[in-house]
Length: 102
Image 1: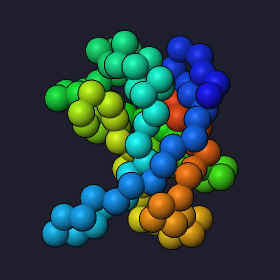
Image 2: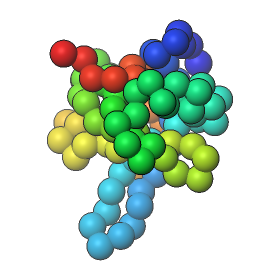
Image 3: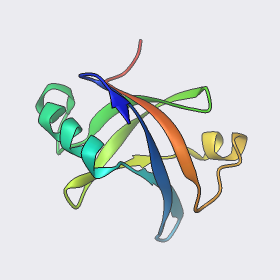
């Protein structure tokens, strides 16, 4: 894992939440989640959600991290997941920057 104050590069496991409609997330590794937690007050816009800019295989997108059990989940947009053919149980190389890029 690499990182500076607000940018992180890491591997994350894809997980599926099987609700009424399935959602796919990347589980943020604990070490990265701890660092993000220390910065959450600077970047969060309420109830712990943190806006981020993400790149997976050079495909950028914006979303928000969701707090979950002391860590964070990164929602994987269907358009990105399908474009990159990300499998349900895949491991992704992620570049994540806290905040939105303009």
